[in-house]
Length: 311
Image 1: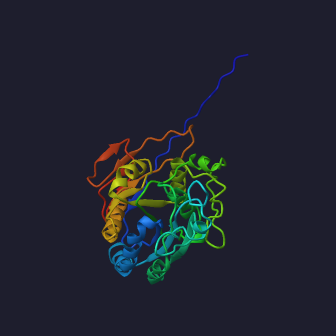
Image 2 (image 1 turned 30 degrees about the horizontal axis):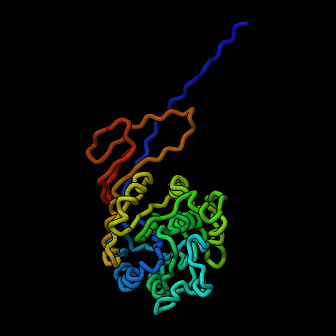
Image 3 (image 1 turned 120 degrees about the vertical axis):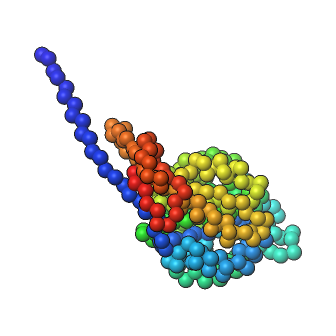
């Protein structure tokens, strides 16, 4: 018996056209390292609060929602001081001013059109203190990304996550130092008190998981970090599509210019992300600003409001 296998290939061509729209709605969530070394930055953010919101509304969009989140690190002995007992309640007990207990991540203010509340909530915040140098920033990023309903992300808006810190962040497997072996599941675990309630149960997320979740939820991440941390976070950014890095001054005094510059950089590039099965072959041609058709390229850079490209 002779058998013949007939394979039929279907070919289809389509074009995706993208235009940079003016005054597009933006959800901006500011995620801040709340360790005691960021005290000056917290004070400056409060002082600049009205300038920040005004500049964002004028330069980026009038349709702006803002929110605020804070993080320290996992409240476990490896990452926090536990002796004497008083230090658990007040990690700054040796210092002139007390500070609140260490926490993992807290959603302080969900996204709101009442942007003046951003400054009000920042004013209420108190920095805490942890034990080791790396912070729990990636735990916080994961919750800020996957808890879209709790944070209040709009489906028809651009989503901007501003991450500010002056230190490194723990990555996957680091939590084994505290006896945590359960990998992060990539899910939302921010409870009704707006606290991350799996901080002492789940490991830190991996960079790959964070990248996948940012893409899945259509969020652009901007690392606003101090000069010494820029090389490290630039390496992270190169692995995260749609992200950017900015150098934060010692007291965050340049945060307004940093956000505006990083947002302009993110908005100036359009890239087609691919998520197709292996049996499907894609051949891509892109027409950017010059009108030239470029084979094999799926991104365009240097775009401004009103510019249009096709892929």
